[in-house]
Image (cartoon, rainbow over all chains, first blue to last red; front, top):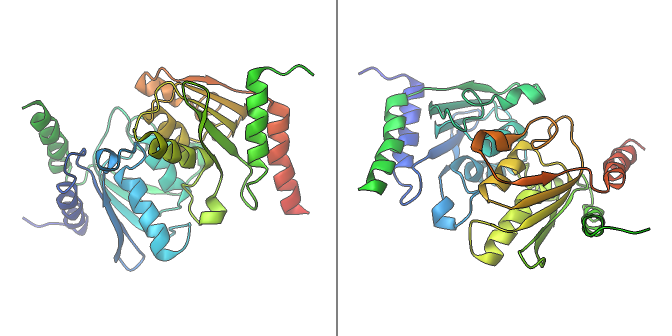
Length: 149
Length: 149
C-alpha cells in the first residue's frame, strides 16, 4: 500500500502510543522545521499520577527544553488522538505551526470536533485530523476492551 | 473594612502575584479540605521559558505531588485571574471542588467569560469570579503600564 508522509509519520505515533502501558494509548511527537523529531511522549497520567501529563503536554515541555525556547514556531506535531482543551491551548500558546492528529474526539476534541479553540485567539495554527483514523480509533477501542476483559 | 474569608484569601493570592517578577502577575494557591494551603505558585512562563507554566498548572502539579494523588477532590483554588482553557481543563481533570478567581478575562477566560468548558464534560466544579476584582485588575494593568514606561 502506498503511504503518504503523513501516514508514515502517524504510524510512528501509533507505534509510540502502543508503549503507553496502563495509560490510555496516545502517542505524540514534534518535528522541527527540518523534519527532525525533537521530542516525543506518550500519555503518562497513570504512570506519573498526574492528570496534566497528557502526551502533548509532555512533548511540548521536552521540545521547549531541547530548543531552549518557549515558542515552537515552524514545528509540527503528530498525535494519535485529537487534543483536549488543555493540550490544544498549550499547542496554541507554544505557536506550533501544524498539528496532524489521528482519531477525532467528539467529546473533548478542541480543534475540529467539540470546540475550535483557535477561533478565540485568531491562531494561525493549521490542524488536520483523521490521518490513519481507523488505526488510531482501534488503539483506543482495544484499550477499553482490554480494561473490561 | 470588614473582609470576608474569600476576600482575605484573594488578598493572599494578590500578594503572591506581586512576586511574579518579569512574568504576568498571577498568583494561585490550593487549599485542602481543612483549608490548609497545600500548594502555591505564580506565573513562571518567562522565568522557565515555558508557555505551559501558568500559575494554576504549577500549583496543580505541586498539589498532586504533595498529596500523592492525581485527583484533588474537596480542594479549593484561589487565583487572581480567570483561568485560560489550558488551566481550566487541567482544573476540571484534577477534579478540584471550587475555583475562586479575581479578574474576569473576556478574551480567554474559560469558565465564565469567553467559554464555560465545564459544560462539555458535565463537571461539578463550582466557579466564582470577581473576588477583589478591582485589585486583581490593577495587578494586570500596572504590569502592562510598567512594560510600556
